Image (tube, helix red, strand yellow):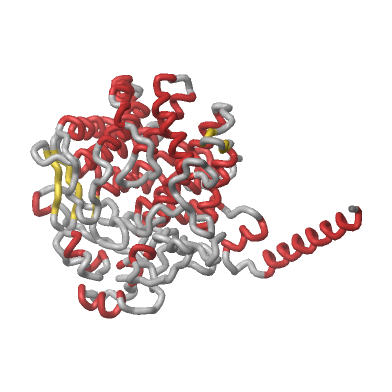
Length: 498
């Protein structure tokens, strides 16, 4: 046994010194390689890049502190056909349309992260950038809610936009306006906007109390619009259609309003409608049940025993995802990635990871030993480690040995399905690039994108862990705000506490 022990120690020391030498001599190599030798990634650095992505998605007049220099001012007349100011906000993904419903969801996730992991984010000096990312979205949502019964939900014609390949700065497709009203309702969009503004009001309460109060006031107005004039939102179809209905958004918004205001009427609303809550295996821009359940499970563990239904549904969500669970519903790829569906799968893996990390923290703080999934038991630390493995997969611990975050490491997607990133910056190439010229010259090119959209998370690999890095393959190569927002939440939860 003694001789074997010596050999093990010798092997360990050899590996250790090899890692040290590689780290010292090959610093310019992939930051993702850190995980191979050091065990963990620099999640603070990762977090900063994930937040920076939002500056590359900005629409409107860019601020003086803009850090993404390849972007310029764009869409400065949005809203003018109906004499409203809809300048600002975010381009949804790789296109030039502003879809208000998923934009609001991204803001809600960013705000949740800012409240849940404020200490960790502060330690990385990213809190001001995160607040800026949130405010760029909330300012737009405030402008879009032009009356108690009106919310503008989209700027730009998705069909026409998707037929063109233009930089936002050159955009000349129709900036068609879409809205919901009391006579043309869209409960999901209004309720998600309410959730975003109430969650953000918590973020700004200690730093800008007047703005926080305005956000909460508008949130209440939007929730009334959503609840009083009920009707499923189909305004963004075929790009964003409501499949789960609007009950999840109403629960989600009422929970955030309760957290932001302390008004028990919103909690009573939740209790009165707890029959809406469903056991689900997905948390996304369309289906918010799991998010509401995790928030209410936290309240349950703080002593509100009448929320047991939501806590049980939260446990069902965990059991649907954890490998080895007797009730697992979401399979993993051979490389270990949660695989919900082929199109932009990383959004589901990241949103799941974000809420799993939050729930593991809830369990730990409540001194609960974990969750029971049939014959399988998962501790809080096991849940956390599984969620962490999903983040690490994206950062390079995967069969392709590549990062799915642009700008992280030496091997990452170079042909992002993104108009602004794939066409030379207007500051470098000021001549207009028209719709067809963009398609012929840049969309169809096999060259890497001229602009590195640092921090962007792409749709991800296929079910066999393969990734082709093709600009035309939008299901796998396109980033989106709500995808990055979930990743921000997951990365923030992994930043070591100081």
